[in-house]
Length: 609
Image (cartoon, rainbow, N blue to C red; front, side, top):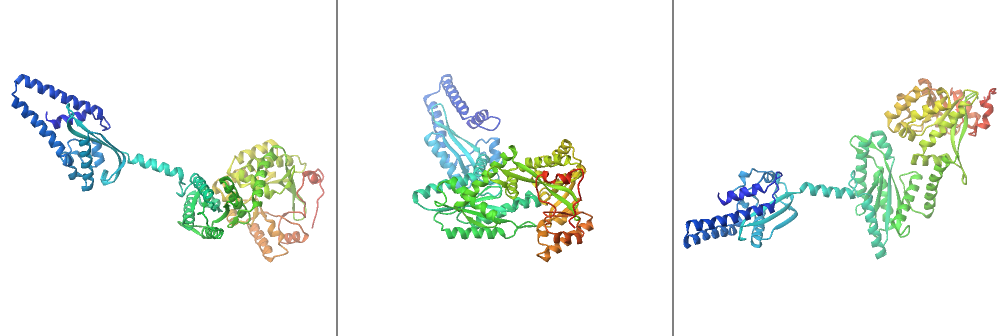
């Protein structure tokens, strides 16, 4: 058997099913073969009684063969290639066997291969290269590989062959790099994430403390972004978020821009940026985001609110700086959004009070600090036909907390679901005890439609309290429908199927109220108090009320006007054929004990006409 064929057979035996070569096993095979060859040669010498000249000629031929291998390493030929090699190089082994590196690879690659082969052959030491770029590969694409080369010698330690093993680790390296990138970047916008921002802030703080420099931290929040997701869906919301992130990054060039989560961003300004430059950038960001962002065929108005904190004036550590930037952002949003606010000392106390109020609100539900007040609803001629249940909070130290302060907090932390269920149960329980079968109206938050099982809990409360479903009226704002419209509509229909009446509250203040009247058969429309209070002051309010009443009459939907406080307002509504009213003229919100005569057995009709 020729040496080439012998080595090919040895290499085949040392290769496993996956195409990996066991170099230790191969070395043993080769060494064993040369030892067997030496023994066979010695036996032949003894058997044939070779002459000294014959032996010397045999040794000379072997030496010439080895010299030829060493001398021709720069242009050595490939004598064996496994299936994995075929797949890697993208060519059949027939096209590689018997060819030199120069005939296979580009000149620069062949030069490197030959140089590596020469070095291994000369030193006898294996060569190992981890994760290096090989500028040749499947279909010509560059690949990242682990390379190993070793010299195979005979029994005397003389070099015979070079064995090279290449492991393609491109996918492994790419995946590792991708995982590392995702650990520090937001998947949607590819901006640095919260972790990366915190690391950058810590580094900036350390540098600023050593060099006594200053910098600014900006906390940003997209205004009305939730409405985009609710109205157009999350795919459009994602496209809009990417567009907003691109604008922020482009406008804030030179600053560190990160997406913290949701619709929140943070910006770390360069060292020693002046207060004027920081404010100018913040105003530009508000302006650029405030412009219409066109995403495919969708146009959506979103805004941007910005809060700013400066090091070291507004904090000397990361926690304080971030908290104060958030305080300034909260003030910007509270004052009307699409604004820029710098941190001021009183903002910190304001944010602390807000967080404390959130904590107290949870205790209020547990400690029976919440109350249900009732406000009468009447026909325009003054006959009381029902009550609206209104939530009140009597704080042990603050006194009565206005609903417009604590209800948004309850909606933010999700506590409104539990509170809303409590109000509904209390209102139904109270109404079920009235001798007169008056109706009771209860407000539902959009959050109650998005979380929990509103239909099940409402049905259960009606069964528990014994209230006839037709006596219950739930009031919703268009915010309920702005969310998941289909889901909310189906839920309203199921509530209506129970016999519950559905009223559209604050009608006329939103932008989609009219379209919703086409989608659902509301039992009542409530005209917002802002139009009623301006009836005598602005002609426009009177025209809006007339238009709403005309539309409702055409659709055969009863109307109740909120905020009726004067006889003149009542008289106007009577002339325009408004059916019902609610307001101080009829009665103020109070505990039901004040209105026991109205819910009693013999109730005197109260006429205000």
